Image (cartoon, rainbow, N blue to C red):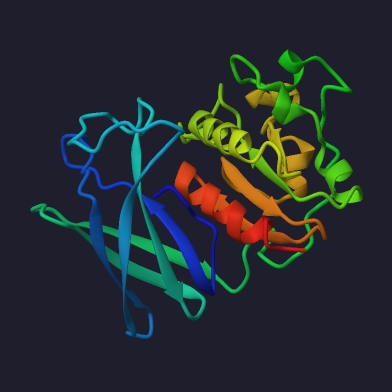
Length: 259
């Protein structure tokens, strides 16, 4: 599972399908059948998305998700009408294999929900410290370090913020998530939308635990990407891996058309 924060309503569910030998299944789609505790049954379609800013191909992979960066993930939009546990079976097209999983759905999202006010985190910028002190990305993208969340909210400027730690990422998709934000930022360079990178750990040291900005946003996992409009309202969010296509589409629909 590449996502964990599920609430009543529509959820973006990210997952891998892994064979017994550790190889990943790369069928382009998978049918998802899921059921709630009350016995109600639902269906959805998961689509294989490329992680990161560059295509890695769609052939059968042998990468071990515990040791190598993952090139592709399945993404399904699953409607969960009520809180509770949901069981699901993913049936990848053309493959003689199925995967099983569960979703534990709460009444409300633990992270800032879509339609809520974004927390005014005063994350460090280049005005506070050199890039190498702010980010673990190599090389650092200084364009993502120019603005804070708090300043952007005060200026009523729409922004995209990625919470990720490329060097110390547990899920192995933080680096690619930052790359995706960099790629999309270049496409919207003249739009007036800001793009911000916030690290995960205090002083960029995993031994010191999550920093205060991650705690302010109540993030239980990493990476996360949020879209916030000029009124300071969260318009979109992505837990775990996100593709260029997903993020670009969300920016066009949720920020370009929002107030």
